[in-house]
Length: 558
Image 1 (cartoon, rainbow, N blue to C red):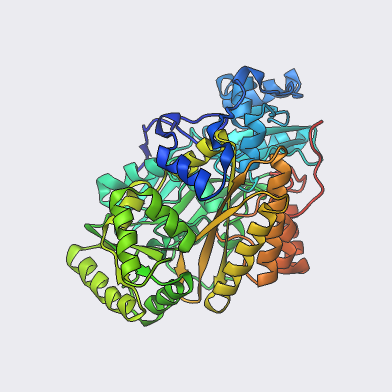
Image 2 (image 1 turned 120 degrees about the vertical axis):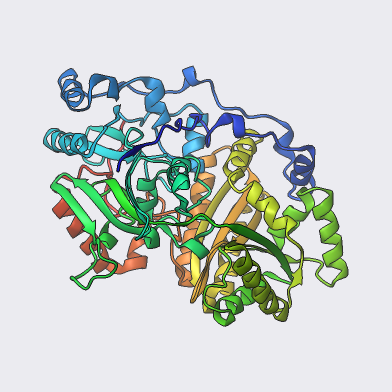
């Protein structure tokens, strides 16, 4: 069974997140909130990106002969040195990526963008690039926010991107075993479109869902907004096919369980294109839910809400956890209540009357058969009420679900308004969750205010585990004259606070460039040697995604 997906590749802009038709200007209420609550007085002036024609991009250094050899493998029409195409592939979607491109700097853009159509094409391209000394970076949806697809050349003069958009087929579906095999270039909406006629879903909905690909999910160990229920991508992935400079490799087992030595699939999950190119993956799928039941609960503080989540996980029946389990701190809740319109403003007044003047709002979605879903919600409600929660009805959770993919578009508009905005995330055990939250929030706020400016930090829990939870920080400030230096200062301070707190350096954004300096603290010196040993075996020349995951000296393009 091979199914070609005919969904159109989503539109994207070179200076921002995605489809420009989905972008919305800031409301008058939001602008007033930025001015008065956050003290950001610069929002009345526009700072648009430069015109595309003004973006600086250097000439490709690939020779005519090298380009001809690349074209002989995947076809001349699938090899591009067009400046616009190179600018579109000049990095990911982190704030530094966007600041550079908005300011007209794409000097490090790849020397060519290739669009292979098969694993065989990729095998031949890797062989050619290894022989010619050309760095190779795999590109799916390009949504990395940690420098994971930064076009670094390492020890090489040239770099090419392998854009997998042509590799978007459903290869096999096993409805009895509930597994499906896809090519790695298929994007989130197309995965769901392919599975829906058969009554299944992957259930993986990261904020990057509209742009990101299955290969990206697997290569970064991503987590979706409903992963508390469906599982993370590394829970869903069952097997993968990898093309490496050393040859093809299949990892994972068709059996439901195996004790045949270490699970090599785990070495590929999260490898970020540094060992080879994931060309296809087999994933676990689930029936499309018959019903969704929404609920919202308010707690007197973020700590109280986190304790309620812990009790829900530990005291509830197995299987009763909501698929979506999200808790906002007081700052994020205040913004939600302030900006959400008349109904949410009324909710804020009601919670104040109930003794929660600065509440932390929890949002929950249970999915499944209708009778079971309602019963699970009711049993969960008893635990949440016993933990001090006040029911706030289904509206806040439904409103969040309606706008669940809109956040990155808001960042584009904030940058245009001269507002620095960025995110980072971590995860900690229940024992360390509150101390990690306070330490990292304080570190971010201090770094934002270091030069006398204002700063704002809001936080939420988005994934709940038996032993702990994630923490996701969003922070804003006035954009300084050197926004790149501002970002580097804040991220360094926050990352050091995360390491000092004993939390993970990344819960679901992956490593890329940003987190590579902290990998030794995460896995130890010997752990880094193990990763380097795997890379040396699969990528002897070191052409695959230089400078990512494993800290190594890098060579920038002049």
